[in-house]
Structures are given as structure tokens and as C-alpha cells.
Length: 508
Image 1 (cartoon, one colour):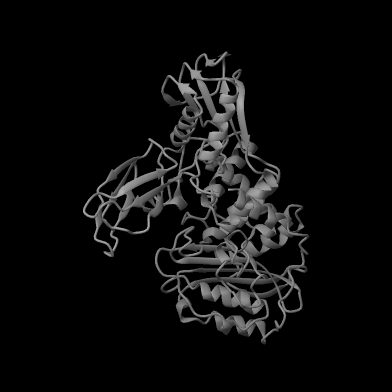
Image 2 (cartoon, rainbow, N blue to C red):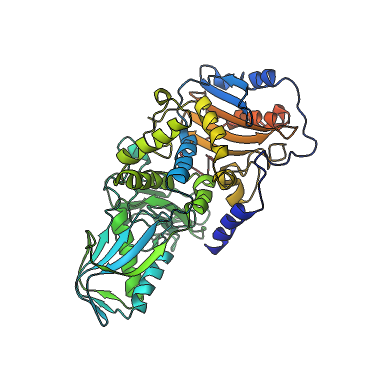
């Protein structure tokens, strides 16, 4: 974790960014007429019959340099995070921190008389290590026993874990995890609400070994998988059915094979967090006599341990670089809680929409059904995305937010993010700062680029209903052309396999 935090800090503190745009790579030159060049890129046969929204604007004057389908409502995929992230910085503030705390009504020597309360406010960065440190604080108070229950207080948010309109077939995968005011992230990417499932081969013909990290009893393992002959193909499947707390591992995995690790969501995030914390208490010599329950912290309970997250300004880096859906949804509920005292999608989304409208996005062209862009009910336009991208340049928080956007062609995962492998070796590399987006039938890229003269441009490319896999190369050709390169320098590609928000296989 310390390595990732260092990289996040480096991104945020790496000098003063000129808001005009980054330096233009040597040798960049405008190939010809912009309109003609972009028309040629968009003449790709995969876009026949597609809904195309493309806008290029001068960042300083707002003048439109190119426009096609600018006012047509489209499914934005993860480009919706542009709205959610900018609203969060404006409405919550750059210094906003999530808190997690431990409380008790009565402590007598080494004993908590009554219940011990674990209270959360939605922190997406709580991993097993953070719960361990909380437990260590409790033990450092000299506490050894809890006579009552461990009570998990998730009342800062409502009890709705995922939007009802998300595709049920997505709900076992990390990009569609349930959220709570108490969460556990299994990794440094803060994929909260998920658990690492490891599959290791055993003796040939015997069962495979399956583990969970962090260890938890909230999830059950049904291990039906066997160890196949060395060199045999893997047919292992790791599945959690909707509504089930059991992960079924089936198929065959070759003897001597490298251990396999996959993420699967945990249906009850609050109880998952409480279970991880209870195990940490036990490891530090604190025994809880009672059960683990959901409940509320009494008003007069004393705080005996606490932990604050990194500030929101730093959280923007893993959020936007890695296109983290769960952070987006947690921010929606945090905004609802701050604005109206209710941590829900129903409370938070209208507040974000009002903020976006205040920047010039007409309400008739905006529909936010979630904060991440995973919902297929979301709608906006490429023109409106470009409008917001221009308006936020005036915000005090803009420099850090700009740096938190993925950077084309930068191989450092905490710099390039979802653009790390794209546009390398072109004038767009190190120049384009933009948010990606991918759903089946929808792809998007919107952000900032410097033209060959160093003039800053804003662009938004949102494509829906194309033929075949996501034509990411079309987006890249446009960005490369704006940076002064030849569109033909980008190889034609189409994203194969699942196209979901957010899959690193697809680099959304």
C-alpha cells in the first residue's frame, strides 16, 4: 500500500501543471484540415448506423472546432464519472475524509460492559490492514473482553447495496459490488465489496485448494474443483449466484499450475467488514462474547478508536485512473448525506444533477441513474461533457483533478491508468489527459489535449451502437490527430471479450 500511496502523492505533487496543456512532443505537426481528417476517421464502417457524438472545443475561448452529434443523447459509460468526480470535489470539498470509528458505552478496566460498536461513513479505502489498526487501538486501551455484541453501525447510508437497474449478471463481479457505510477493500485498488478467491492446485486427481483474502466467514466456499494432469487446460469456474453467500469453485486446474486469483463480490458488505474487524480484535487479544449484529451507535457512547481516509483530493487518483465504480457510488451517497442528511442514490443524484446543470448542462439532456456509468439508463451528450470540461478549468481543485485523469501512453499504472497502453509512440502520449468509458455497445473518451502550437483543446468522443467490439482506435485516432499526429499511425483494433465498466482486460 505504501508504494501505491507514494505513487498517488507523486501524481498530485509532481510540480505545477500549466493549465494551458502539457508540452507538445517534438516533431508534432498538423497533418491537414481538422474537419476533413476527423470526418475521415469517423467514416469507419464499424460506425455505420451508430450514434456518434464528437465535439472539439478551444479550451480558452470555447470556440467549437469540430462537432458531430453534439446534442444527441448517448450512453456515456464511465465518462459519467467526469460529472460525479467534479461534483464531489465541489460539494464535499478537496479535504473531505471518510471516518471509521469504534465506540463503547461503558469500559471498566479490561472489559467493555455491554456492546462494542463499529461505525462507518462509507470509506472505500478500508482494507484488512486498516481494520487491524483499529483493533490495535482498542487493545492499546487495555481492553481484553467485550461482554456484549459487536454491533456494525452502517446507518450513515441507507441499506440499498446496488442500484435495482444494474444487470443482475454483473453483480458477482468486482466492478458491480455492493456498497455500505462499512466496507472492505481486498486490494490496493480499493475494489471495495469484493474478496480475493485464490485457487491453488493440489495433488493430481485431488481437490484444489481454495482460499479467501481477507479471511472471512461471511462467504462460504463450495469447492467442487479437482487438480488435473500437469499441462492440462484449466476449466476452473468461480461463480457466486445472485442472492447467494456461497462461491462455487468447479472444473479442473492443472497440477503445478500458477495459483489463480479472482475477485468476487460479497453480498453483505456490512457484515463482511464487521467479520474482518472481529477477527482483527481476536488477533490482538480482544474477545467478543456475543454475536455480530447490525445496529446503531448510542449517542453517548465514547469513541475508543478511529481512522480517517486520505482526503478526497488524493482519492481522485485511484478513482479516476482506475475507473473505480464503487468509489463513484459511495461519493453519490456521501453527497446525499451532506446535502440532505440521507445517504442514498435518491438523495445524492439530484444534487449532482443540479451541480451539472449549474455549469450549463440542460436538464432535458441529462439522466443520471448512478454515479459510475454502469447503468444503461444514464444519458448525456458529447457537447455537454465538453461544456463541463471547459467550465471546471476555473475551479480551484482543477489542477489536481486534471492530474488524476488517465494519461495516454504512460506505462505507470497510477499515471496512465486506463490509458496506459494506448497511443504510445504518438504525439498524444503524455499529452492527452482523458476519462475512458466502456460498456457493451458504448465507448467514450473525453478530456484535454494540446494541439501542435501548444493551444489547449477539449474533446469528447462518445460512440454507441457500433458494429463489433469497441472501436477504441477511433477514439485514439481523433486524440492523436488533435495532438498533431497522423490518425493512420494508430492501428485499427476492436476490443474483444466482455466490455464492462470497468475491466482491465478491456481498459475502460
